[in-house]
Amino acid sequence: MAIDHRAEVRKVLLITLLLNLLVMALKAVVGWLTGSLSLLADALHSITDSANNVLGLVASRFSSPEPDRDHPYGHQKFEAVGALGIAAFLGIACFEILQGAVERILSSDHSPVKINAPELWLLLIVLGVNIFVAFYERRVGNRIGSPILIADARHTMSDIWVTISVLGGLIGIWIWGFQWLDVVLAFPVALLVFLSGWAVIRENLPWLVDEMAIAPEAIHAIAMQVPGVINCHAIASRGVVGRQIFIEMHLIVDAPDIETAHQITEEIETRLEERFGPARILIHVEPPDYKSNHISYES
Image (tube, rainbow, N blue to C red; front, side):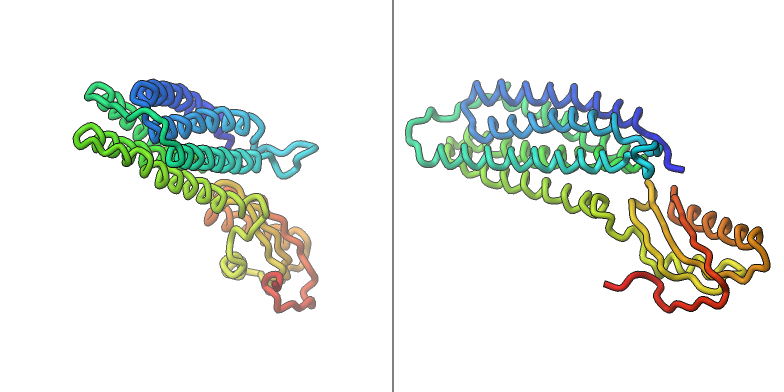
């Protein structure tokens, strides 16, 4: 049975929401004081951090692993949908950053960026908060298998690299007066944001489209080790290993009665859960003279 970690997910998201609001405010204030396009773009990126936390809280509210009448397979895909929402926010942030950089290049009517030591120290504090948030979310997300926390941690990691790039550019402006660094750095910032969003999509789309979770050969090998199993075929699986998986198979057993056949299927289910974590397994027992060479479905 899948374990409901929603309370812990909500706790982490609430903590990171407060920290992200602090980070966003500091970036916006320093960006406004200095007139830095790259830093204002980074503040926009941080707005999506806060929006992602809110989205994650909403998704977690509806992502119970327990089934009900309307959702007999549970509600965990709501978390994957929330993670894709994060990717959408990242796409919007990428577009806004590029738009601002192009407008700055085409327009000669803009004030130079001005930066001083106290503002740079504020940005170092921002960087430290982002690093804490990213590692905190990733550690908890990996421990409980939460895609929404892992996706948000990846987003925050991109924010760390963005802040490092922007901070380096502002130091260059402060020391050497290289005003062009502010606009130039806006483009790699946009690229990092885009790559982060693409990674979130790549990780969560298989869960939403019911892509194979476990190689059928691996399931077949475990089933065939159970005494009394003659043949195992038509194997299918979906879900996320270690979090929640669904397995179906057809089984031919050497059993004199239904009770013995049931004991064999129970042993298979136990071994599969020990190997792959929480699972709901459906086994269709067929007569001994039935033959099939197809372990799984052909593409």
